[in-house]
Image (cartoon, rainbow, N blue to C red; front, side, top):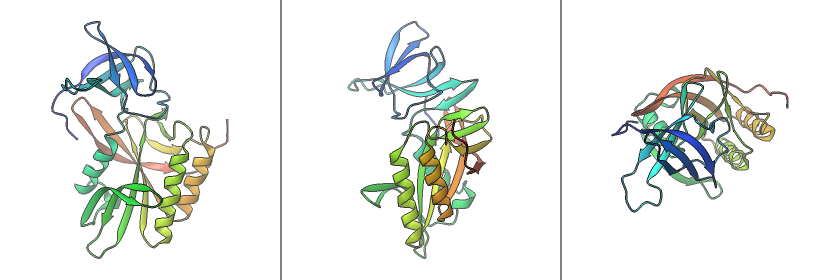
Length: 238
């Protein structure tokens, strides 16, 4: 994914009411930007950290700016959850994701399961289907990417629906798009949500494939970089 304009640089002050983030610009002005992320953003809210904002240039928008990324320990992390699905779709349809090549059609946000929409539905000419659920991952401990950053009943529901697709004879993939480039492997965050980790392992045992890819986060580029090893070994609780 390419952006037409470079981002606006600022300093993170605080996030509040989930969708609001105060940012100090280089001019000294403080603006309130839209935070397009409903997660906890654990590890991505250090006061004074550098951030990128996107300018909508839309005078009718209540919040003109969107918070896109924050610098964490020298690495830029995308926090805009509107982007990962688009990045994954772009990479899959361009044939850059080896395990997901060979499909004739790709569609986004297709209804399935129990009042859900699959992020990406891939279909072969022979009619075989592959259901791909994309999860954006921002949390890391050292070189280890972790998901989730908070308890997620919704994430467990999605895994259950992927299992149902496998049982129906389809292929199903839980795709973790890691929105940072400073990690080398992926693991479920059992210390944060042990039930999710357990459900992920049960889904994998049932035939759901688990893929994890890290990304390159640059001022005018956000794209998948390479595949990481997904470690599904159960971890002890803290």
